[in-house]
Length: 313
Ligand SMILES: O=C(O)CCC(=O)C(=O)O
Ligand SMILES: [Fe+2]
Image (cartoon, rainbow, N blue to C red; front, side, top):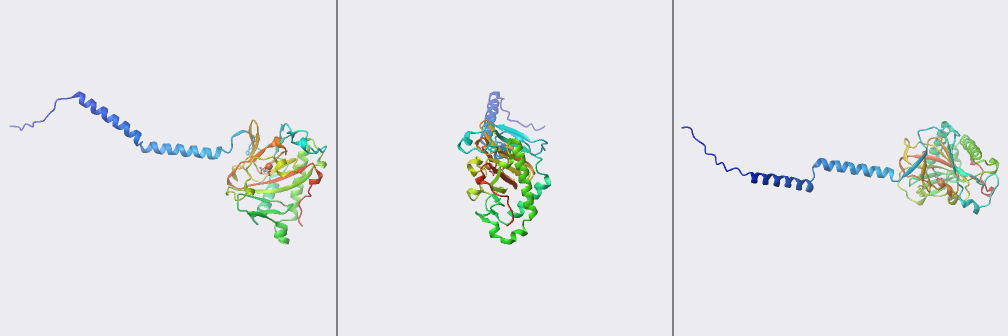
């Protein structure tokens, strides 16, 4: 006789199963909120990193308009007229020089790429003699000032005759030639008498990297008005010696207008110039990586603040 297994079958209780399923679902939902699955954690971490990275790179910019991009080569000077501030009323006026119309302009055809590269090599040689402990170093060939650690030295005194092994007569000739051309294009753009404009100090090469600032001299990024910061400036020019986006990141020049920010992206050989009053409040974005080289060459209308071109002693 076949053995009959007696299976203890309980009567089906549909209500009980439903309750169990509901309990199971509730439990799964509760644990989902208590301990989200790993893939969700990874996704959240990914999004958070992206957001932080985006903020890091973009919080500093808030750019409303890019006046000139690094990647374009402009064939004609790009000129932007701006209403002159009232600052000029507080200064003596010099006919043929004091700004009557104010503004800013950018051109890529005053200095050749090769000349800009030669000036960059000059700056690299000079600045390699010392440099700031922080991220911003300057070399002023007129006064001889060179950043060294937390202060400045005079290269002509500090290195004496050895400086002639670093800079040649041709370097200074190039500086003079470039300075003269810059003066010419500023005069033409603003309708000035070139002979009434004078080179003024400081005129300097700058080298900026992302090293943390050690002194206030390294804090190049603050918004400022050149006429206030430097006193004698009436027209500021900046000649860029390296490329935004490939030599360095950050470091764009920003005009801070009441209706938004407008940038100029540095490009090797690009010249940007502007009237130095508060109509051209500006700043430089912090350099995030790489090294940015530029020269500041400025002009005054006041003959009392004129300087001669830099020269070897
Ligand atoms: O290097 C620049 O783009 C600007 C520097 C500047 O604002 C200055 O020298 O006053
Ligand atoms: Fe400035």
